[in-house]
Image 1 (tube, protein in one colour):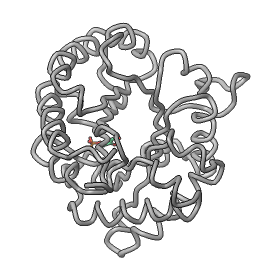
Image 2 (cartoon, protein in one colour):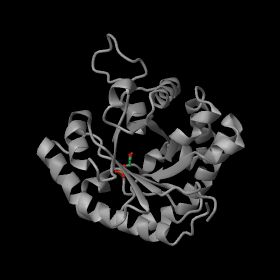
Image 3 (tube, helix red, strand yellow):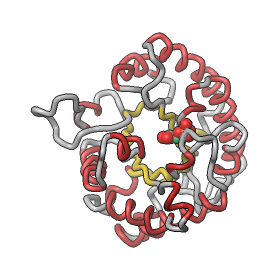
Image 4 (cartoon, protein in one colour):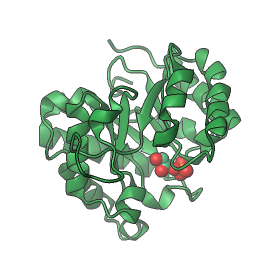
Amino acid sequence: MGSHVQGAKSLLAANWKMNPASASDAADLVRAILEPYKAHADHVQLAICPPYPWLLGVAELIENTGVELGAQDCYWEKAGAFTGEVSAAMLTGWCQWVIVGHSERRAYFHETDEDVARKAAAGIAEGLQVILCVGELDEHYTAGQTEPVVGGQVRAGLSQLAADDSPHLVIAYEPVWAIGTGKNAEPEHAYKTMRLIRHTVGEVIGQGAARKVRVLYGGSVNAANIESYVELPLCDGCLVGGASLKADEFSKMIATVAEVYGHIPSTT
Ligand code: 13P
């Protein structure tokens, strides 16, 4: 299994999206995940990405637990007259991670590839780990256009990054048709696209650097199917939406990932 990024644990990132609706529900959800996570911390790196207003409360709850915190977006300017925006620089006090280019931001908030590239570069410049999301629409998938579409998003997303940035970059392959639909991608399709992503990263920032970039799968991942992704040689973990809001199910997913990674001999 030497094709996983060397020495890395599997990464599980919980994208809560605009959930839960109250601070107390957010706190309850974190508390319910912390205890089961403890037993698996050796094999699973866990990043929770709540909405902005819950970041501080979640940060307090996860202190000294090994759980990491992420935001779901950022703006590339450091500060200024940008009503409603939150800069990458402002997140650094609380977060280790930021998600950029999620398909919901691309679709509902009209983010372009260029915006996403600027956000990725700003996040890394401010010392955050960036999860750059890419993925094809259903119409691309059915037309067999996944590779050119995803390859193009990867090239564009990396356009402001250099080889040195690679240890701070994670690329999440999230087919748009699989997000929130219960129609998760076939592992074979996920594998081929993740291979293409790695190949493209190598072309853009160099093969050595590409080996340090982690690649995740996301899209209707749940307790029943997560094993089929994390056991793929090129998959370094998963980005989870809906199932990360259900403490029992998400705890099972953490345990499953730990089980798979616990059996992969270290390659370092
Ligand atoms: P679901 O797991 O709800 O399909 O969402 C995936 C996702 O968009 C994570 O970023």
